[in-house]
Amino acid sequence: MALSDIALTRNDGSQDSLAAHKGKVLLIVNVASQCGLTPQYAGLQALQEKYGEQGLEVLGFPANDFGAQEPGTDAEIATFCETSFGVNFPLFAKASVIGADKQPLYAELVEAAPTKQGDAEAFRDKLRGFGMTPTEDPEVLWNFEKFLVGRDGEVIARFSPTTAPDDAELVSAIEAAL
Image 1: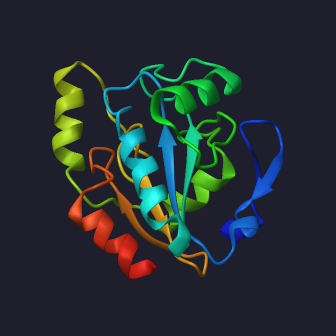
Image 2: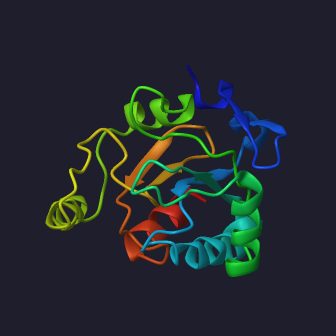
Image 3: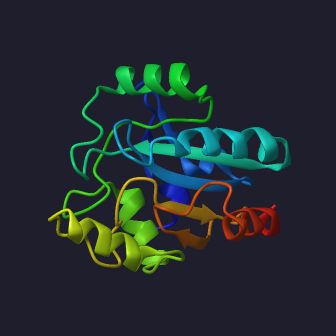
């Protein structure tokens, strides 16, 4: 199935699909409001502001899969993102990004890019140090994992959750796709 064919629901309940974002470079990120990585929202918004007019669109997909760090409702998530980080990029309805019930978009993303760039192993070791059992590739490792999708709708790259939005490798990949 093409990524553009997958039906999506926005945070406000309206319907969407990646086909509606055709011709854009997409940075698809599973997000959470109560995570140690939550400050990445500011960097994601900065990317949207810097590159949006060139065709980048950040898309946020809240998920409560990791440490129950996204317990809020869709409305609470939207309010938090706007008031805490000035987020104005599209947010989608909260849904799972791992396991048997993962949303179809994430099933396709992990199939298209089964491994990630960045320090995933170091992050897995950190999680183990906290007594947690991290996921293994191809599953999403944690909140704020990033998938870069080209204007043609194909996955270009996948980045570890700890890859900051201003990371040189991520920014370079975005600029090359633009």
